[in-house]
Length: 189
Image 1 (tube, rainbow, N blue to C red):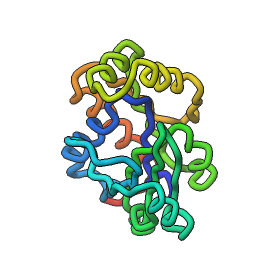
Image 2 (image 1 turned 60 degrees about the horizontal axis):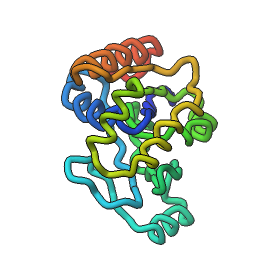
Image 3 (image 1 turned 120 degrees about the horizontal axis):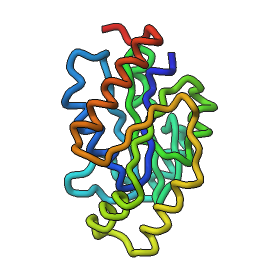
Image 4 (image 1 turned 90 degrees about the vertical axis):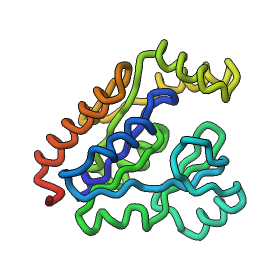
């Protein structure tokens, strides 16, 4: 049942990594879950996700060799999720993927019942968070913010607005996933 694939998207600055990290900490008592490690063509960032960092030629070799269950390009980098990272789906586990809105049509073509989660925040909050990162130019930040307007999510997507305390967003997501997973009689405890 592919609804166990939980594909998380949202604009930069929405706090996806923070929400997913905290959700992992409070996942006890929920169905077995795996948090997919991404392969990315950018250096690791202090305090960021524990991704596999590769250069562009290595990524292309992996892609050509069929190493990825899914892959996409975003923000000047290539992202991939290797097949072993989604393999726990076959064992009835939930698999969380920090994904890309641009890859969503391809993802849903491959896994039509995937659970899509959008984590977002109001534009002023996104702008403040992106400026606080101090990693990009004003133009790059503007481009990131404008990109969010062009993507539509499925009506079934879970939408979480992360504009207050982190615990509130995590609690809303946990409750929504409990309902969604229970509704579909999925993931055995």
